[in-house]
Length: 565
Image 1: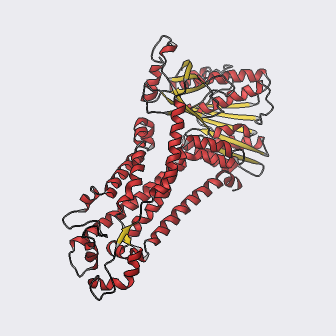
Image 2: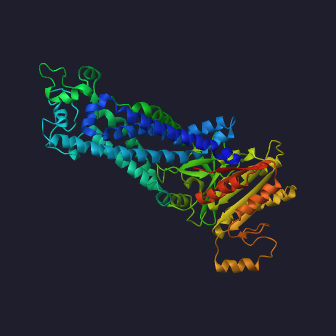
Image 3: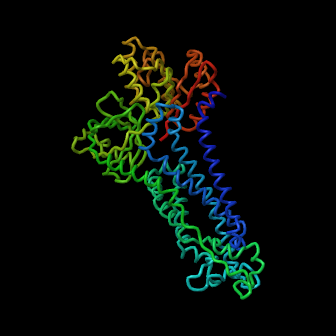
């Protein structure tokens, strides 16, 4: 329980505060619209008035938050500042996309409630105009404001129209439709199956957020929902005058015809600051994207993995960080994230890019991956870089014992870490706190091992020479294989080096028994905090997080960290 609080306590606190603010805004604004100022509006609309306005307040709050988790430069700055005070607080920033999604779901929920309530409202407005009976208060209220420049309560001014026409001929209606369509497209294209298979669809539709925010700011300018003005409330007390509506404005009546006005638009007050921050974020990105990047080396690894080694003036990185890469000759709008696989000690920075989609295939071909001859340097495409940006892996050297778990191409953040560990040791860096690294790599196919196995072979040989063979323990798992491959493995199993990777440590088949692995590590390192770092699928993350919680005891604690970009 103590370890759960250490790992998840702050996250749960933040989520509870966020949910609490949402609940407070909803309930508070629901009650606000039960005030007597809105008495006559409720005569027309009933409880649907409060059900429309309460989610609107919560929407403003969440729309204020939605842009902040994607301000990468701001988060990197905050992470670098906060981690000196609290590692736990800094780790929360690594969950920025998770919070971004939660806020998006909350926006979708409140939007749905807001829309449904307003559909009822427009039906009630229309019914009040259709039921033309001067002995009914709703009809009398609907007739108020027919004169020039007179205030009105019912935005549907005639019985010869319908709610659909009003929807497409008013500011609130047009902006509401635009906001809703943009939100539907953004959310549906963000589904994992679309994001992974059709990234370009996800990328382009996400930029509909510009239309969403423009529509949001102007949505309230029509002031369709109206209440009594303060001056009118003093002259026409609805609790007294509502029953005397037939005599309103007549000689001898103490109740004049009520006057109505809508609240001034307030959404801009909520979203202006985040929008300015985001604009500044984009300006920084544009500035950095115009800085010259030189591709110094291109390596075509097996299993269609492209390695780009690059240089950029003033570029500085830490282990496990990532950059966004743009290739203008392919697309001037698309930026794709890739983990840096070089070490900070090297005089270049590199990324390994697996060819899995249209954009990566185009980059592969632009770099000459589909050609047999060597690509000349001047023919290489121009590249723009934005970053680097921080991730959980930056904290790896803050732990005495570390578990690194990579799945498939998810091993890339750990290439940087393992390289940097080696450089620090050969340079006799006394500031290295880490004393032991356990490395696990899970791969579904033998070809995926090939590019990374070279690095492991080099580390294995060099650490043996330095007498540091026990510093790095690694376990490589092949999770799927063919029958022909299995026969080959059996024949060469007794060989000194592994038939797949060429390493002395033999490849294991299947999946790790994580319970045994955690138990073994806990028994070997009592009294320590073990940093567990994962770059892999969510299902594996849930399994490891569960193991961290179940194996953390008084004398050893497992702290879970997951790459998230």
